[in-house]
Amino acid sequence: MYAQQVTFKWDLVSNYTREIMNRLLIVFLALAFSNVFAHVEHHIPNLGAKATEFKDDGKEAHKRPNMSHKDSLIMQRKMHPELLLHKRDRTLRQGVRGGRASLEKCVDCHTSVDKDGEHIPVNAPEQFCSTCHQKVGTSVDCFSCHRTTPAEEM
Amino acid sequence: MKALNRRDFIKNTTAVTAGVATIASGISLTTFAAEPKESEPVTKEKRWGMLIDVNKLTESNIEDMVNACQEENGWGNEVHSRAEQKPNWIKKVKVKDKSTGKIDTLPMMCQHCEQPPCVDVCPTNASMKREDGIVLVDKHLCIGCRYCMMACPYDARSFVHEDLNNQKTHMPRGKGTVESCTLCVHRVDKGGVPACAEVVDSDAVIFGDLYDANSKINQTLKKIQSTQIRADLNLNTGVRYSGI
Image (cartoon, rainbow over the protein chains, first blue to last red):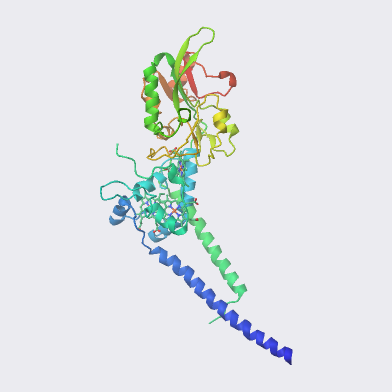
């Protein structure tokens, strides 16, 4: 009789925890997904001079064939490290030039210009290639070698 | 509401993961296929080389070659490095024939060996030879150990000892890595000629494909006497000299 009562109580408890767990799960999933969607609409400050112009002209940057522009941007955001590394090896080791993913081009489009018309290094604090990285605590060493502003005009 | 149990949850997530994986692989396929106008990887069908006619070069021509290289690749402005630490992608050297005492002045840079000792000793695969014979440092992999510098019989490589900025767009350089003549690979891949060859008379320094029977370099090498420096090492250099 005593033992039965204990079991009964345990059942109650586990039902209760399960309920909580399920709710937590739902909350977790909701958060996870809302995060994804929130990021689609997120605003990136300092898109860069040419990139801003590009966008204002109504052109779809990073658009990939057979993919909506929105998805292409998500893809660019999530995959840019892989795309860059892939490009890096192909260019340096196999001599493959041109194409879309070159680091030189990222810098060209995504650098901002200060009020004196000077280019600001693309990896300076709050600039395009550092805002997100600051947030996620990634540090990128590429720019100890790679030029951080577009080439001077010839 | 239908309560999910653990097993269902795992089942569902697997389904979702599988879905994502399928989409993702589809994405990467289209990505790489759709990249606009990428050039093809270089092949073994070519071998880039250079023939330097020492008799046709004055000392000031050689200095012009060095300056052109500095200008093109952005080295030579290092301020904190000691003289022996400074980069030297190409330099003017004097060689003396021990028996006759004849002195020749010639431009010396990476000889782009077919059997490069610098590649053999590299622990990270950073020191490498492209299919078309150009010997490079893949600075992305270089850990700065400098074995290659010691292995090179031509003393062609140098090490960056200080932080740099304002590099050339086409020639990233940075502290802690080894560098050397790239045969101006960024120009060659676009059909161009190395900066040092461009700045002097086109008969004095001939750049081209050693394998191509119709190329000027191939035809000239068939006609005239030429040497490889330290030919005794059997490295089969891509850079050849005549007139010494």
